[in-house]
Amino acid sequence: MGLDLAQTDDNTAVSMVTEDNGKIRAKVWGILPKDRVEIKSQKEDVDYKRLIAAGNCFAEGEEVIDYRFVERLIMSL
Image (cartoon, rainbow, N blue to C red; front, side):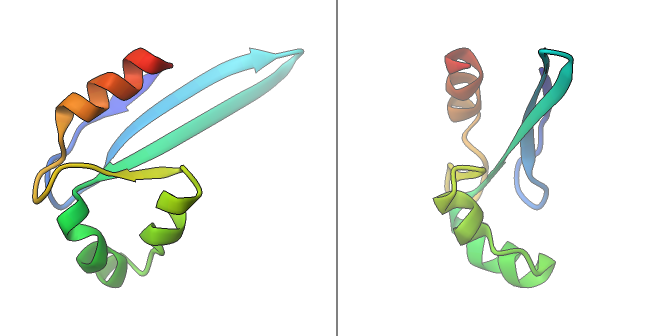
């Protein structure tokens, strides 16, 4: 597992890597403040709403990422 923490302008990321029958498998989740989804989508030209709907990103906290959510996500894996 890997963790890259941020609070406002950057995204927090949680990543997992494992081996499965000789294949390397990886999964990464992004976390950003929900009040910044629109701003970041325009600024970075990323469709965060689509990524959130697909379960690849989470919008947690208001202007700052909710680290309690990050902790719960990690503990649930």
